[in-house]
Image (cartoon, rainbow, N blue to C red):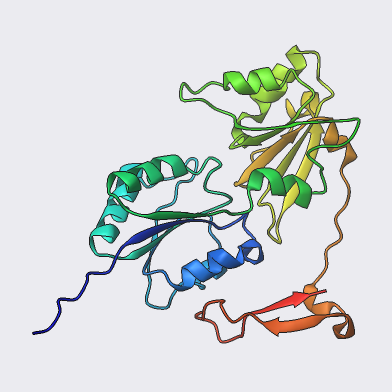
Amino acid sequence: MSTPMTPPKPHLWLVGAGPGDPDLLTLKGAKVLAQAQLVLYDSLVHRDILDLAHPNATLICVGKRAGQTSTPQVLIHDWIGRGAQQGLRIVRLKGGDPMVFGRAGEELQFAEQLSLGWTYVPGISCGTSLAGLAGIPLTLRGVASSAWLGTATGQDGRLTADLLAALNTSSTLVVFMGRRRIRDIAQHLVQLGKSDTPIAVVSEGSLAQQQCVIHSAKVWLTSEVESLPDPALLVIGEVVHHQLTPTTTNLRSITPSFTHEYEVPHLPETRKSHVQRLRRV
């Protein structure tokens, strides 16, 4: 008499895709994608990262974008529930780090309601990386000893109380989803007597088309910001005055005699023909 087959055990991986550049995905994130059967990904995830998913995986975009049609959270939960019922290995792939304005808590609570096992795979947060990629340190001795991360707008449509309070400190402020509110933020700084405070807008950070535009609060009141595309992040504070200019390099151009190149055996097979490699200096 044959033994009944044990049904596959579903699992949810919450994976951070990083700030945009596919090279900034973690090795663990790539390994998880290689085993995925269902990938629910945000609209900001780079196509090259999706190419790392298992060739037979089902890929579904469940993105949310400001000013555009967004996927309701209840529908995302529905997809997770369907995948769990089918015993699938589910990857919820989010830009940046899922635990920072990624609604990770809601989705993990839903998984626990289903008694669905889950694993968190951190990603490089936009909040901590994009300033640096634009040459701006978040903290600097003698200038700023703390950094504040937050969103611009509350559920009531106004600037959040936390942001208004933070603007009256010497902390560096990193503001998510703040490009459309930059004039309101600048106006509040002017009212606080901080009209010379620099504000940087980092647009499409980490990608080849990254832009960084810097003006003082009083200048932003009349400056054009609509032409800067989303996603965009604001960096506010005296550290912006200490911006440095990063040097762009192509890793493949590094002199071979000073490098070691080796295959990474646990990276997934992709839909591309080239072999994935790491180059270590």
